Image: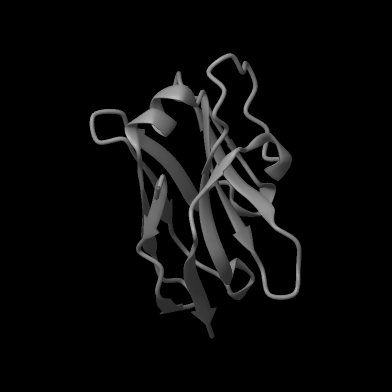
Length: 127
């Protein structure tokens, strides 16, 4: 059963923008206090990019603060990541994730906190 599906990845030039979307199954979205976007940079470990909790509070990786915005649409069970002023170091496979725990109180950017994952969408930024 497909529970999280990302879309919106593409190849762009430095300074460009992309908007990633993630459609979640209702059972996953409704049971998860924390939702997030992660990425796999080439040759590097998965890192947390941004998280958002049930109350709309957000956390960002320092290098994307001010350029990326995570948001959620609870009517559509969808998570978004607006990415502006993209840089080559933003290149990677981007994944959305849900922690599957409605009792959480802090949404960390640790991959170990997240139970459900999409299959990813590729973002490539070239100069």
